[in-house]
Image (cartoon, rainbow, N blue to C red):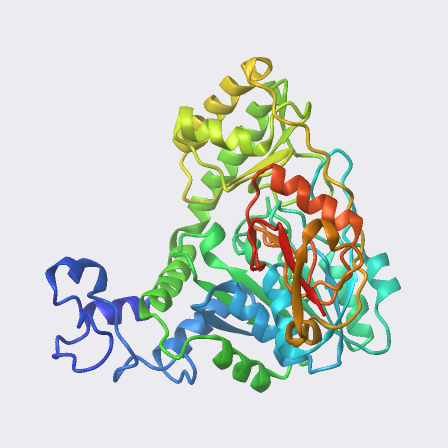
Length: 461
């Protein structure tokens, strides 16, 4: 069933003296796109107090994904992460945060006033990205004061953690487990992929449907299960962080995606998995470029292209694919690049990527050598004050190269993937300055800071 979408298509053609201003696409140029875009009119329920068609759609979604209750998100997973943390933590509460969490988790610390205790994921030898969070790390970090733990699984690179073991342990301590599963909405639909955080008993799970399923950008879902979460407070938080004018196009698209998964997902995912297996097998012929494929906790829908000889950067690889082969990757970084896949990818698409990478691999030694950039190892930050305190504190601008030992007053976030190098309230160390400079030389973009060139940085007075 996809009642919401069908209702939008078949609704009456009453003249709309209501929002939105395009009036149902009555201006010809907008008609095809806007015809189904409405507001909370009679018969179409209300996302913030659902009692009818939206409530039923959310129930179908919960049943499909294995949750007790699901909430549609039209402001992306960001709104779900903000809502989850705010519903669990108040000012001064302790929350354990994986250091590779998305920037929205850090924003939630500012909103809530919670005090973070960070865990640094393990390093993966030979890569410039982080690995899993282990149960042992959690056991060593949580205290009697810990209210919640938030982890990212899978990460931007498709790395997962043993959520089942972690959830069992934290639940024994009365601690709520929040999992940012934005990159794992597809994992429930084929056993080729790791088990989902819901299957491993996490309390709140946030998924971006648009990342790995056929759904528009900005659509996501928050799932909840168990009796540890105050669901009324969660609903209040969702109402705060989601727009009061939710897009019915987005809501209907989520419902439509769930219907597609129910009706066609099994066949589509079987073909998708066969395409992935074929690609991994064919990639073994490459000599200089390799697919990351040897980690215990890995979601293999992310194709991680490793540049083992460091002669070419991931940024350069992406540029060559765009210019020569008209293929664009999700991200190029220093020594790897990421090709994101989904069940919407065709065999022809996989074949085109394989052919392009194979050709580049054959020409590898003839490609002008990139500047070798050594990325310093990340360590846990030195926290001087909470992100909220630093956010509201008086600040001054100083030169980045003179900032060592200062307390950072803003976020410094390479994007993608959106994981801060330094956050408000943390001491700026020599290592952090080195990391920033390496990424600047590689032309990585930064967000969260007032000077995107990072010649200047805001610090506490």
